[in-house]
Image (tube, rainbow, N blue to C red; front, side, top):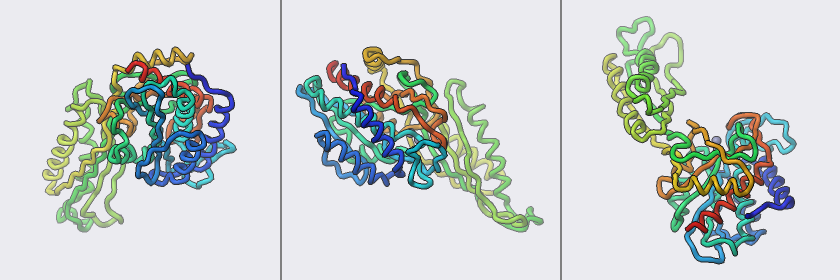
Length: 380
Ligand SMILES: [Zn+2]
Ligand SMILES: [Zn+2]
């Protein structure tokens, strides 16, 4: 069993505070990348020569032969103005580690450091992935294109969970986080005088009908067991009070856990948009952007994850799924993987300007991932 020393724990806390004070947005994590590399080098952990502007991939090769597995952390921050009172508050105005990726980074770094001292226990290789740009759902995709998963047989990761106490780890096979897709719908009419609407085709009226009608796709067209959400999150059209505009643009997102629902919804939405537009003699342009699949945990790892948590003296609990998305799902498109919730006992939810977490969870997370890597490799 691998345990963290107090010295390493305190070192990781100070590294986390440094990252928290110096957050960087997606694909701009240059200083973060530079520091991760320095920290790895300082501990003689080999950095793999991937051609990345931001993000780092390192490797720990065990003394015994075996497969390669990966541990993944995300490293980016958000465009949020921090409102906490911590002494290591963000120095970058309007940018904040409000999703706790600073915690993920140092926890996986800690796991790498622990594993690097236990190479004699490792029957295989651990690739450690510090991924950029999770918040815009682009980082995992980019790393996969660069070959980050080549030779990797399975991948493990986590998200902090503020509503769970430190020392608990949420575990659930199959769907843990929802799929994320984005849409843009442009209703086109004919602009005109607000006092003479019969000579115009009013796209505001068309869009309004659609905003309410689209919810019937969830309430009337989906199986009760196919949980899904459609949210329209922006409406833009018109710029003054006495002119009917010619276009209204809607944007929003669809979340679901079932591939069947994910496949059906865009077609139903487009058809409804076209028919409402046509019924009003307008037209529509429907743009669907596939973002992320479901975070789909491979059940074959559930037992080893639960037993590892017990073995190191922490508490496995049944994870509640979240309808937020995670680009960890993208790796699971290619190889089996498992994503867990790490209890951090925080006062606020993700992306809140007062988001914070208990740093005690760093020790839990580093010990969990280092021990899990050893156990997974030992079990072939
Ligand atoms: Zn986030
Ligand atoms: Zn996050």
